[in-house]
Length: 275
Length: 286
Ligand SMILES: Nc1ncnc2c1ncn2[C@@H]1O[C@H](COP(=O)(O)OP(=O)(O)O)[C@@H](O)[C@H]1O
Ligand SMILES: [Mg+2]
Image (tube, rainbow over all chains, first blue to last red; front, top):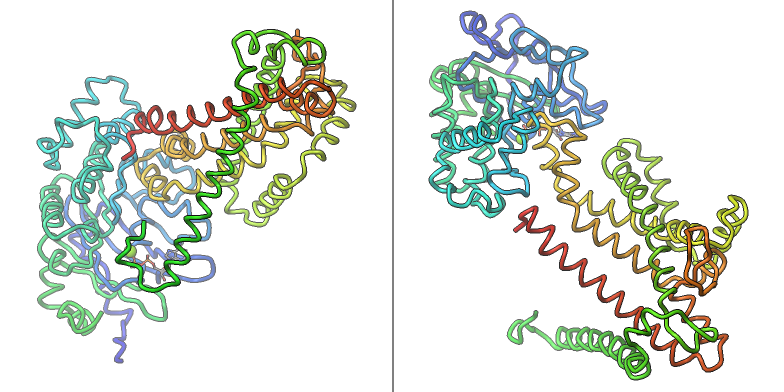
């Protein structure tokens, strides 16, 4: 096994300077630990505004951990500590006194396994809206219809809004989860392998949906599907795992990363020779 | 149900036959008890039996005052068990896992408590509630003693119900900017409600069936209680007394026992109906 040497001088792991200027999310020396075990090596990364940013790499290289660090979802995991900074519009989300509710409203999350609540379709979106202080019922209804239309679910479910969301198919459930997240008007949407639990058809529908979000909000999507990363994303970060610790290998415009990777390891991975 | 064709060998068949026989045995025991109760007790049960006060130490008259006492004791027991138990279950399922040692200790205490013979609870209730807290032989004292007995059962059932709620619901609540408390109240608790209801039924069942713990705490005064500080005779105590201490009390003992069983079956039925129709429909579970 040839381990590529990542030299510190030649820094390929941050996005080019012109993109960094437009950064929406910035990781500065972010490192993640579970107890004493480090899961992610110090990583610095800029994620451009209103673009689709994909994260690829083999299982266990800390992609999910990194994604969850971006809106502090790993706060519930006692053992998990995050060092360094995660800047959202220049402000560290890990700073003391961060308003978590506000943070999560700005940065939404979609999980690998669709997780609608055991409520009706309508209630799944209504509940978070009410929790965020939407008093007017008619305004909430309007918003529910709008987001369901946005994810292409309205025509499929408009006659059974009061039915259980758990009776929807996997793909419909995932789109409902996206609608639910969009209802809160987030600036950033984090998606952790949003298609990998879906059949190919549903997967394609969700993929189209992600593409439609470009220019509207910043999407960070973890995917195992290299073709998908290539099709939908503007920028791609490639992570690898060494000594059971994840590290960023290369980050670049998607076209460049796939067609002219700077590192041998990247080339081997995107060509399917490694990983 | 295993199909004939899937049976590969004799051992499968023997096991299947044995388990089927076991099921029939269980059903048979239940049917025998019910049949016996019906045969001896049905004639005695009537509207006047259910409403009239007992006379001549219970040989004659009805069980009106005893039903009222039973209801009040049960009410006190549940009013203490449910809020306290729910808080404890939430603490153990939602907040304590991060403090594993303490949680394990709490769980162990509950398990020991739930395995304790009821006579021990009776003695404790008598010493603590009746004498130390000065409640005497009263409905308060009996109800609170029952609460001590039912609490461990209820806490464990409610805790299991909360744990069975998928972690992804909690993550979903977090990701939508709901605080942990709001997620708990709006998503996790409703999802756990059927299991929590089952815990309440378990608690009621144990409380209704209890005799030993009540003799020393709520006493055996058969009069209609005027207040919660009065002594009150529970149905199970009444049955015990009629069967053991009152000659010629057998007929009314059977009628009372039949009432108790029907009450238990009714409560079970209502709970099942509630969980499947009322609550499930509200939560729209599939
Ligand atoms: N809750 C956790 N507790 C302890 N270790 C964890 C936890 N979650 C993830 N890890 C560890 O962190 C590393 C990265 O995991 P993860 O972020 O899920 O990787 P990926 O999403 O790239 O597959 C793995 O070695 C995993 O074992
Ligand atoms: Mg993952």
